[in-house]
Amino acid sequence: MSTMTAARYRVSDRRRETGDTVTLAIEPVDEPLPVFRPGQFAMLYAFGVGEVPISVSGYGEDGPLHTIRAVGATSGALCRAEPGAMLGVRGPFGRGWELPGPAGADLVVVAGGLGLAPLRPVVRHAMADRDRYRRVAVLIGARTPDDLLYPGEYQDWRAAGLDVYTTVDRATAEWGGHVGVVTELYGRLEHRPADTVACVCGPEIMMRFAARGLVGLGVPAGQVWLSLERNMHCGLGHCGHCQLGPLLLCRDGPVVGYDEAGPLLTVKEL
Image (cartoon, rainbow, N blue to C red; front, side, top):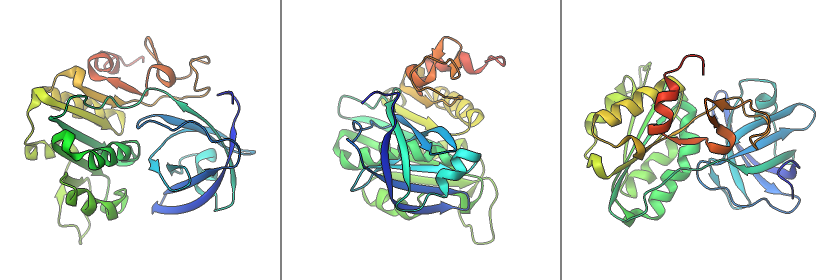
């Protein structure tokens, strides 16, 4: 099937994550698309409304999972899709996360808000292949406790030997955890910087400071990976909507090393 032609997928399950965010499980009606690698994205089409890029947040029994926040007409229509609804799906697109090859590396996952969605496959990979890594830390930041994604999974992640730390910008009366930006959790890391690979996703300003902080701790810039977002439209690098300097993020990203992305993110015109 052509990557310009949407395959039909049916919503098999819908789970509300936060007040404005849901996770859809979808199953193929037509021939299934190739398996998405962690960090890759799909173009999801709400029939009669439009198409938007959405990262894969995992795999269920029947097919991929997509965690979607309602921020516009198309994402809102997707969030309202009930089991049985038909969607169009194109993909997989883009470059995924560059995970460590040799055993014994340390892994740091830094997520801000909805950025945990494309990072959840990395977390699940680390759980499934825990012996490959010396230490794995997952640092999660959100606006409020109610905005934390997948909180019911954190205990399972810890039980698998991952260090999981959370922080929020604004606490509630019931919140007993850390309050502040996610980079304030770096003091809890017990990693060997030169042997660390970091995966970072969240709002762009958060990623800039998170990546800069990791490099400041001694992690090589080429081992810090960011998932960047621009206005992706075609998914194939033809339309130019997702251009960031010399990069077309639907093709050359969305995952880009900080050694390459860092200088580009400092240019206001980009």
